[in-house]
Image 1 (cartoon, rainbow, N blue to C red):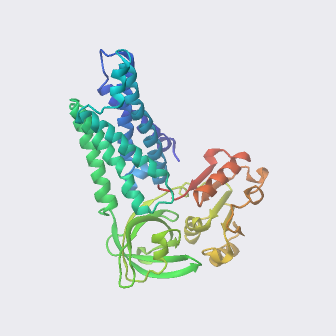
Image 2: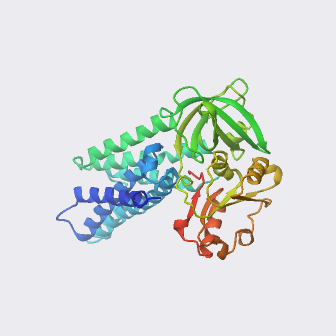
Image 3: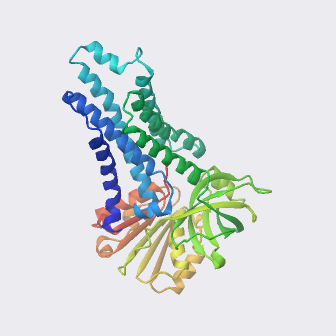
Length: 417
């Protein structure tokens, strides 16, 4: 990743709150009250950045280093904003201690206050709700998505709170920008205006609980490179119930007439339903996203795939994109569970630069200390990882222990909650 793209998100996260603070810096107040107001503005700025990072726009994702990196910073800015906005009323109450404990308590428990004060507290409660569901990994995706939308409502209500307090000059443009971002995400992302129409051309089982689906474009095809992923929503068909929300799937190959092939493993309600999909089912596709395999060098490479995480590597291999000595470590629960394994073995047999090691690990986390090459064999290697978040985190830890620096570890997973 270029230095400019690597710096884009930190600079954005600093610039927006700094702009808010410079624009509305208070004057003539006590030091504690000044700090309280400043951190409130910084929290508002972080929330606006948080909303921007929810957008699923391929061009924006390319500028900011990828959709997954945007979601990581989305989580960071949300948590930081919550902490600062929670400290905002606490510091205001601390400032009230100079008058009396009663004044300080009335700031924290505004039971006798007006709607302008209550609106600020309600915005903070909605922010707490939106952040809390972020950590509920087992909640059904559709319910999680609607509850997480409380973050957007919290931002709008918090800005409205400032307007009710009479701070309308700097806030009205900010409120308009926040509403525009939320509307953009709803219309183009959730409702699919940015998506292109496709139709399921075929579906074949490639392992137990995994199908590969071919999608034929019905309009202008998307520009997709091997190893990237797309967001797909499948709709109801004659014998298919459909699941209208968008989910990420890696493109396993790009066929003639811009046909896209994706591997779908049964990991949730929607993906289990997709296992019985039939030709003719309508789909909407957004993308493409992801670039962790796009900037490979001529250095020796170690690819580590966990389960369906093998699909980006398969996409590159099918496209004939290997030009350096490469070892593919493919971790799966069992041989019947390993999608595309016969094809990968055939590709490895015909490709001198590729070494394939497929390991059935069972349901437990594999012993990576023994499976990964020793430090002397990793010297000069570029390491590419794709799989479940827990596996990727464990792989990064072991690789760092063996002397591989962060700039030589490239990874991708699809944890977008």
